[in-house]
Amino acid sequence: MQTPPRVLTVAGSDSGGGAGIQADLKTMLALGTHGMSVLTAVTAQNSLGVQGAWELPAEAVRAQFRSVVDDIGVQAVKTGMLSSAALVETVAELLAGLTVPVVVDPVGVSKHGDALLAASALDAVRHELLPTATVATPNLDEVAQLTGERVDTADAMRRAADAVLAFGPRWVLIKGGHLPNDAADAAGEAVDLLTDGSAAHWLRAPRHDNRHTHGTGCTLASALAARLALGDTVPQAAAAAKEYVTGAIEAGFRLGAGIGPVDHGWRLRTAP
Image (cartoon, rainbow, N blue to C red; front, top):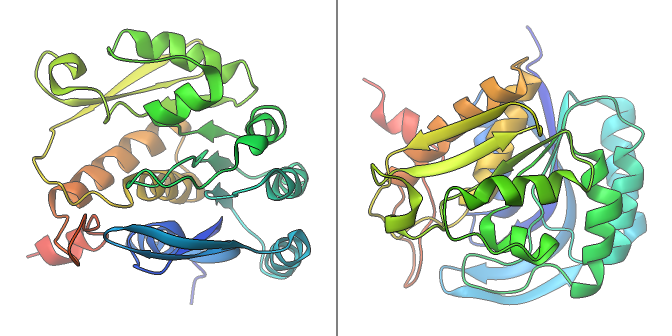
């Protein structure tokens, strides 16, 4: 029996199952890889927001990482919620010893606006974590948090990408889903920009009128890591991840009284 590609997520737990390591592992399975996890924090979270968050000690994060990497091995890594400077520094140190693709999702706030990264950790993200990234995947709020660049048009995404690349990732995928509909694209599409500072790839997909989009960022970053583990180039992986998350957004469903999750199993439910 052939072992599938192995992908590791280093992220927080979402007790509601829509984002965090739960979304990551579902995505990795849906795309044909074996997902593994390093838990960084536990949240009490549902469709209405985050009611509480508890960070794990750095030594617990380090022990989980070494346990998986030293025995099982990995072919790609994705990072999500790291919450504090101590955890960012610990994870950056661990990632610096790897030679596999790393996708850094610089999670700052939840879908509901709850802070998931301490302000004191921003410098560590900029100068220690981002330089380890094969691809960084900030949304527009995270771009503003990290660089001070406010993006309100698709054209301004180039400037934002340059600002993030200045911190050292090889590629950056600026997610334009938060652009106003009238500023996003002439065709009303959701537009993302993938660039290494030289080549620019504009990724376009239909915008779906569905409020149930919890976990979108985690899902995209995990899909990107999974495709890299499968052997895609960065542009190929980003295009495949965009296609997967667009389908998941379209199929997002009601859960609880607030914002429901994207549907990580949408391909299973649409298969003939």
